[in-house]
Each structure stands twice: as structure tokens, then as C-alpha cells.
Amino acid sequence: MAPKSPAVARWELSYRLRRRREVLGITGPQLAKDLGFSRTYWPKVERDQRILTEGKLTDLLALLDFPEDERVELLDLRNLARQRAWWNTYEGLFNEEQLRLWGLEAGAQEISTTESLLIPGLLQTEDYARALITADTAFIRQIEVDQRIEARMHRQERLTDADPLRLNVVVSEAVVRQLTGGVDVLRGQLQHLITMINKHPDTLDFRVLPFSSTTGAIFGCSTFHILDFARPHQPTLGWSEALDWGELIEDENRIRILTVGFGHLQNCALNPEESLALIEQLADRIEASVE
Image (cartoon, rainbow, N blue to C red; front, side, top):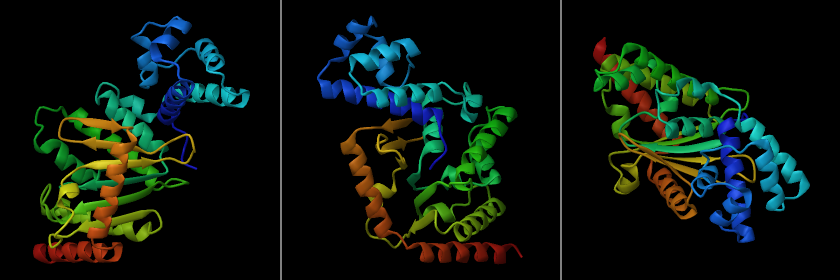
């Protein structure tokens, strides 16, 4: 089982409350009125932006006629959701949605991700991460640079903990060729990828979409993640991002598109063995060029 995450508990709690209300055919405004909430407060509960007090949650569970065993479970989720985790240390440095993603990532069982120009954050070396963070952000203070790198390295602990995250990756060939940070940084990054792929063959599936591929370009130019969880009440989530924003996706139809798209990319990409061979070839070429 993946580690318990307050962010996952908070999301599951709000999701199950919303689904139960919908099944019973109760509207949000009606429920808010019955519980004495304002019309603006209840939507924040359903969007995972507020946690009810224990008393209010108990009243809500009774109103929604949850079975007794589920009431106990949901109250336990509330208690877990109120706990602080390592990502809360970085409040103020990163926006709420980014921190929320990290919390969901920490409690996920499997993540599928695609990148067109960058090594995914879960696999970046410190030097590579520093090169990215400092490249076009000279206005960021050094302490913030260090904190951002520290947070990125903390996220990576899920790859090697007692029950490691399964990570499926598809990147464009441009990712492993782009001289991000210079020759030495890229060489170190490629060697890190080689080490991780060889060391974790059961939990890391890394594939490269080659320049020679005639399909997959539309999905390949996107950056998105698909997060799967262990518990039956935790449906698949998606995350899409660009330079200055990220969006959590809960809509089943949109997630289906991402899932189909990722499967298509995997089929278009080199298989894991071929991808590793390409990375090793590029690493050897760099090594030979600097000797």
C-alpha cells in the first residue's frame, strides 16, 4: 500500500461526500441550508478547500445516511486530512494546487507521465533541477532556489521507499538530447536515468518517443500526469500543466482521453530496453566528447 497522505485523505473525503449527495439527489444549496452553511462555503468543502469540524461532519454523515462503518471511516479520513506533511513546509513558496499535487503524488500507487522537453521532476538530479530553476529566473533568491530543489528531491523518495511508487514515463527524444545545464549536467542526468532504470526494473518503465516516430506528436507535445490510487474509493486523477499553471483533472471523460493518449504514446515509443540502449549510447557519446 502507498503511504498515507493527508492530501489524499482530504480529497477522498470531499469526493465521497459529493458522490453521496449526488446519489441521493440532494442539491448543494439544499444541503448547505440544512446544515446552516452559506452557499459559498459548501462548494469549498466539495472542492477540497475546507475541512468540516468533527461535529459538522458527524451531522452531515447522518443527513446523508451513511452506514455506520462508513461514518467511522470518513471520520478517520478527516483526522488524517488535518495532519501536516512535508509539503506544508513549502506553503507560500509554491501555490496551493502545486502542493496539493505533491500530496496526491505522495499517496499514489502509480503515476504515468509524459514530457516533451524536460526530464520529469521525479527523476531529475540536483544539478539538472538547479539548471532549470536558475536558467530564466534570476530574480529568485538563492534560498528559494535551494528550497525548490530540496522539495523536488523530497518528492523522489517515493521511488525508493518501502512500497515504491510505480512510475511510467514517456519522453520525447529531445528530452534526452537537450543540453539542459550544459554537457556535464546532461551527462550526470543521463547516468542517473541509467542507474534508476537498471536498479528499479519492476517499478520504473521509461520510454523514449524517437524522432523517427511518425505518430504520437499531438500527445507528445503535452505535459500531463495520470495518478492511480490503491483504495476503491479513490478514482484516477489527471494533472495537466504549462509554464505558469497546473490543473487537477477529475472529469472522467478528460481522464479517459489522457489515459488513451498515454497508451498511444507508449505504443509509439521505443520499448524500455531500446530506450535504455539509446540513453546509454548518448551518455557514452558525451563521455567520449569530453575526454
